[in-house]
Length: 387
Image (cartoon, rainbow, N blue to C red; front, side, top):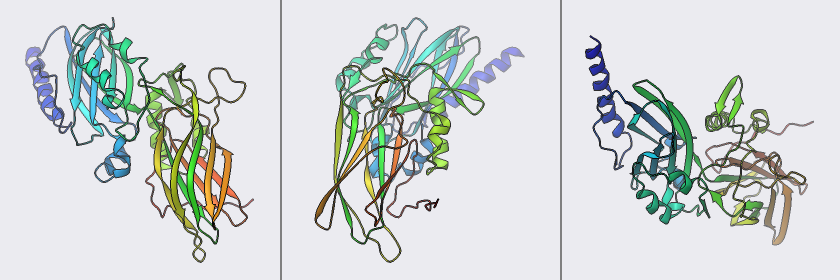
């Protein structure tokens, strides 16, 4: 009876393999070994997704502006406990971007695997891609190649993403895990509201101080587990929870302080911080009757950075500066302000900036970190509260 049940389990896994393979559309699978029962091996089922997969899935077919945010290629590398390669799988999705992928592996038991996920690696370095393609089972150099790999990003192309997980595989036959990719980028979105009687042109946005290069693999430091209500979560899973929560409350400026900031991380020591300029122009219409003019600046991406406040040596609260070059009625104007409520610029952070121009020549700035919302010209803002 036990033997019959065992074969039923393996038949179920084989059927699942056929179904899961189809879930990564357009990909070529390098792992083609037939899964067979073996006393020394287990089946590892991996689901890889984006941190903000729900939003991405809704927009993947028509979101021209954020097509760089999806998976076009994915590498899954499984290392034995001694650091040698057990599996090195590369999947090319062609021109069909993906938000999730399922794969099944046969792995040895009784050790803790280290699993690397890397998406869009070619846009970090074609040389890196070619080097990783040569690494076969038993290779000992993978971690040393990727762990401290630094690149200068070009966010016109699909954004490199990565994550690293430790997975214990003990005596069980089947291990299932759900993993998320973290983009090696931060995202900025600016929404403008104009309560003046004349239109305002946004000629350029300047942001200081931004790192010039970034690690491919996240360099998150202790604590690796973070608290979400009563749960202790691995930092990537924590980031997923916060991202989901911010999508439900995209205008909650207190969410980041409530949940906490990821500030214990490293950026390449040799990189310098610099001012980044994103040119317009973007015209923000004037008031029409009692309706303010509204406009959305095209989203843009910057490397994760770590500009610490004065007096801090390694980790802690950060600050960044915003400068706007504007023109109104033929007159050139400038506005500079330290970003409020932006205490860290860790990778995969989406910074939503609301800027309001008033008739009193005021420029009001509101920043919501982690928020990911669909930006449309006729966006809605919460009504202002009067003290």
